[in-house]
Length: 62
Image 1 (cartoon, rainbow, N blue to C red):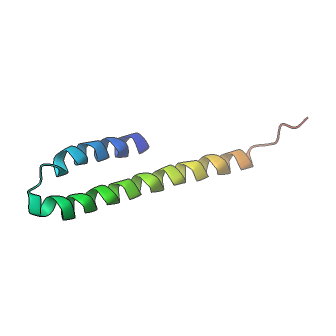
Image 2: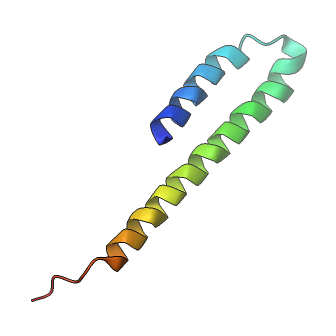
Image 3: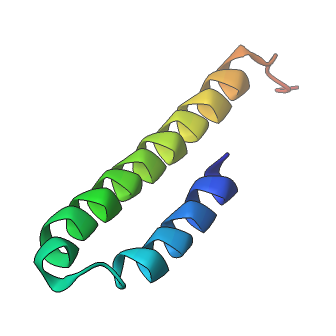
């Protein structure tokens, strides 16, 4: 999911740069900012998921 979101960001950056000038800096920037926020949220969720899985696994102290 993270890789697909990153690919979407790259794709959108290429396409928003082709928006008409009056839309490029407002709409294009908003789209890109929201996609980066989505990517950041997905990365945080993945990190928390991995961390929770590690805390549930039995300790190997021995």
